Each structure stands twice: as structure tokens, then as C-alpha cells.
Image 1 (cartoon, one colour):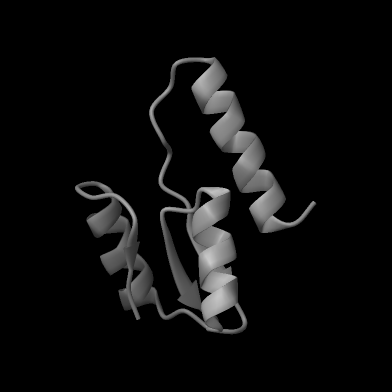
Image 2: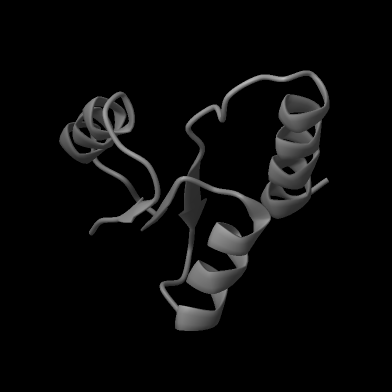
Length: 73
């Protein structure tokens, strides 16, 4: 199963069990606008390209604790 498929299943489970959204960071090899759009439509909280550095991952984790749907680079 691919990331967008898993994300849709997680979002479905959350909605059927009355749970709030879990932050999901999409890591993709490309930064094409269509791929960003697909990831966000699937329910991902945010999006970044690979490789991701430790500092950027920690920054995103901190942002997720206080925000929803952001695209950062």
C-alpha cells in the first residue's frame, strides 16, 4: 500500500471512531504540484521532499503540535 492509500485509511478510521486527525507528513521524491495536491487531498497534514534532514523533521514535528495543513520546504 502506498502512502496516500494508507493516509486515506487512517483518515477514514479516525472519522468512524470519532478521533481527531493524526499529523501525517508526506515524504516524496518529487516536489511536483500535482503530487503535493494528491498528498494533501489524501489527508496528509503537510508535505516535504526527500531527503529530509533531522532539523527539518524536528521543525515539522513541532509545527504539527500546533497547526494544521502547512506546506513547508
